[in-house]
Length: 426
Image (cartoon, rainbow, N blue to C red; front, side, top):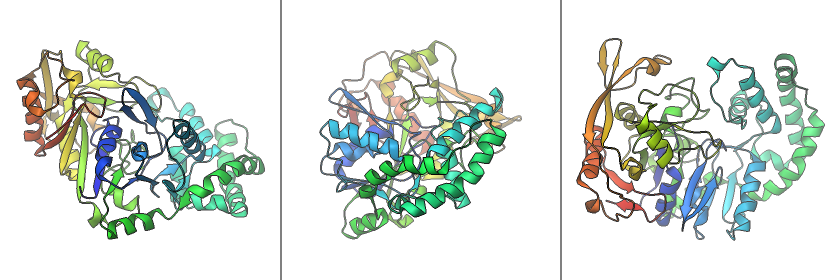
């Protein structure tokens, strides 16, 4: 295995956690490179479910080292809660195994308050569907150059000064615009002190560790969150997340050169889902959509919100291939489609009278397209017990092969169930 990026090719929730967990077998270091605890990676190991929001999925492999890169925004309270839960399960989460970049920006209490107040203040038509975890406001502070970084947690006076400076603007917004009480800087500082004390041993030079590992020829796995079409630049703006989710950000968000990214695995769900607001051309409000939602247990790992479900959108995925340059695809949740007599694949869009093979670029234009479908036969067999691609029903194999033909990328992994063992390697 080479240095590998695992990223979502749709709107998140593709099953990246399981794929990272599988590929971790051949990696020595796993590094999360963007996003925050607005993402949830669900793993099923020996029938037991584990949901992680910040700590890389590879933490369940005892010999691996897990890192949180500078491209992440980290809520230290949530991080430490995950540490405690994993430790209670007997997982080694000592700083020798788990480290956060000193350059990682920290989500503060005022970020969460501002995020929730801002979304609540919007009219129903303007709501983005944010998780309210403070992700966006933290990235805003990073870009405004008033952010608090993980390294600052070890410097109390610097931390206090940065809180005071940040609250000048935050309090003006909270009290002046959103009708919320202003925050006291000293109270926020005191609230953060015990958190900072616990976090400090986990803070270090992630870029240095990644560089040393690569120089020694050890494999590094880069773990992304959310999906390509939630990317702040390339997604369905403004219904997007606050970071770059595409594969190229694995380098910037971890602290290595782009030439080190040798393999890109695009995780694709066998149908399409979306949580929250935003355009969704292939969304279904019928028995087939209900089947996907029910059989696929489509609820957000972070919010618990029901996911919107629809047919696989290959036009959207063409754009994902163009943006990420995947070497191969990991196709997930193929088993969920079993029992549907017919399946549809969106191969193009009609937009303003024209046939388009890619999403149009104008804001919210994806809400105006008409999907062009290709209908293929489904299968009735239960494929969850299949252990090779050849064992799959013929119509199931043809469905996978059609995806490969349209996208020009091979499906090297095919998931037929939630457990590690329910994954077919091709």
